[in-house]
Length: 237
Image 1 (cartoon, rainbow, N blue to C red):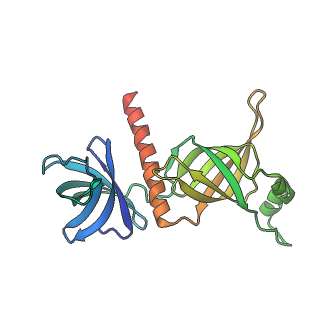
Image 2: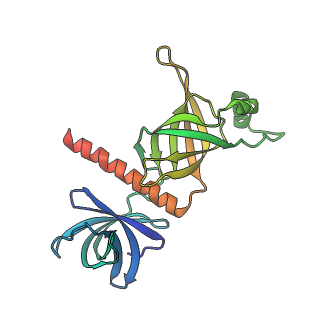
Image 3: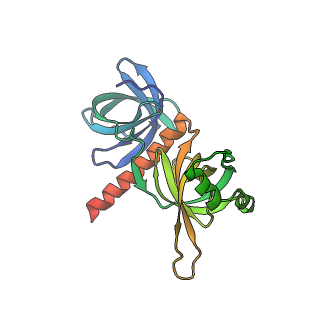
């Protein structure tokens, strides 16, 4: 296994219970060193761990590892050697892997769609009539919204404003291990009839753009945790 742009990992036991997060450093040809909290206690030398590496180039890599050779590097952290015994695949390199996630966000429209050309396709004409540019001037600076699902490639959210196809929006995902500032381009919209006396709601299917490798790694980590939660709930039913 060769990591190209990896600075983060998560350590699980073999029942997929999260033990801790770790920083990743290259040690030598023998393997990698993981920087973990001082309170992390190594088990027997033969104990196996499920370690997930988040690599900005290679994606999310599942491995079975042995950890050892602990070195204290500060009052809060220690370094342990990580020796990969088995690589179990790259589960989330597929950008279409989506997980349901109802998370409250605040969306800001940061770029309007491009002006339609003099000769336009039928789709562009339809969009320009359905979402006139004049409506953009009346949009709030921050629009309360809720995500429905999310993947490493995009997000679907619902809000009370109909944003035009082609617009760029930004929002922060606070449920990740650190707040992530994400930018997305709206690819499609749909209208939901109001429930009872409630307002009309609009759904927006978006593609992430301008995402840096470390942000993608954080996002994949969040998606993986959500998927683990779903598996756990499924086993408890």
